[in-house]
Length: 309
Image (cartoon, rainbow, N blue to C red):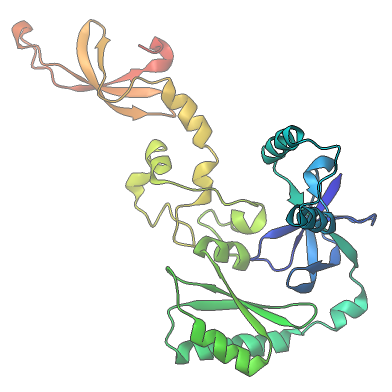
């Protein structure tokens, strides 16, 4: 069974909907019914799933009512029920609602225009400033049925915005929701140009933002450049550090660990550093005063020629 993943705003997550027998393609605008009301969204992905893992919400509700009312068929024994429940618990099910229809030209005509959105955003920002809240409101989304307005914002930590919601509700006369996103998500939505001179990867092609750690920069031996040079426009470590991480990990495993005692042409020493891409290790040789050698120098050992020791 094929289901569509629909997104209502660039900063919102995607939600699953069944095609409902419609011919749906990527980037189609569709009308759906959610728990909060009717919405227009864009199809960002089409995926195949097992029919048994998809549950119609109406059937799910009826099954729930059955259990509440204690109605079980005579053919189902308690033992069979326990086995069935155990099997079902091991499989993640998707409760998906159907797409109602494709969006039409008239649907878009009924949506708020750019000027109305700008006015709403301007008022929300001014209200936030009056309340002295440490948050950045950067976008607004009106629901298709006009019953709800959602403001997207960024903040460090949790914010008590109850007074802001009360003011916005009083001003707009609609249900108000505030949606907090991370600073990396803002860069993905707004876009910019990276250090490489190209459009940000998160804006252009990255769908999922993976966790970027300082260990990645250390393994790739670029941490010494300073946080400013290895951080993106969002102020976090650059996503491209993950691109070659698997290759660095593979090459690093072929080198002896830092601190390991090794033999180099009959001389003993200790590995003090790696050059992962060159497959070279730096070895500090032991002092050999008995042979008249001061020793203590650091030499490079090419592991490609010698093999792992």
